[in-house]
Image (tube, rainbow, N blue to C red; front, side):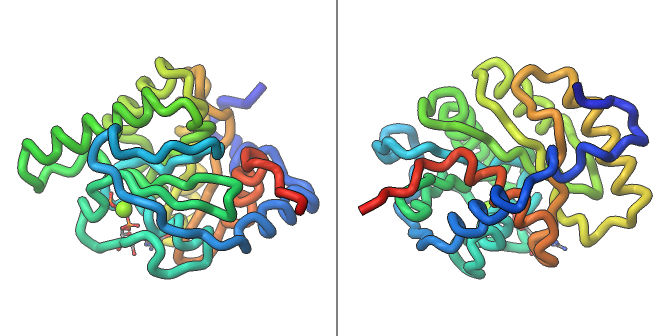
Length: 228
Ligand SMILES: Nc1nc2c(ncn2[C@@H]2O[C@H](COP(=O)(O)OP(=O)(O)OP(=O)(O)O)[C@@H](O)[C@H]2O)c(=O)[nH]1
Ligand SMILES: [Mg+2]
């Protein structure tokens, strides 16, 4: 069972990945990753048999940057200093083994209300209704910890029984002490959620921290390599 002691950070960066798992992750992410399409409503999402993983989180938390860092492609997913960059659900095919999905952020107030309502509804419809969705990486800024919008997302994922992994972002911006406190706080919060993985991955897209572990985590969900 995971510890909920706030001082205990042993569940940071996963349950510990062995060399073979890290290698699987590395190999998967050397595959071509191709942008497939952007959807503004559920009628536009692609039909696909691939296992799917999605990146969710508040606006500006670093979802698109993390996809770029994982794939080693600087401009695959569009990023911005301004919150509200990603406004559609973007699908990427990783080596015909995994569908990678970049979601719009929630919690962004400086856009027309109707537009915010539209994309919030789209995120919810997608998270509730996508049968092949195997895992949501729920990104939380390591400087801030979970906010109200994250708690709503966790509740929705619990209700929909979609397993999710909390990923702390921008750890390059936090000192060790506050980072440990943030991890401890997240771990104790996760123990209350039924669909949450009981560990935290700590990442920095800027520095590459946590990328091998996150790649290994996701490789375990990918379709097997086709032997031709
Ligand atoms: N220091 C630091 N900055 C980061 C990191 N990851 C992302 N950023 C910055 O955070 C800002 C937002 O990044 P995005 O990847 O566009 O964030 P997003 O979650 O996709 O945002 P929306 O699409 O608006 O929801 C950009 O200025 C990035 O350069 C990181 O690991 N470290
Ligand atoms: Mg984005």
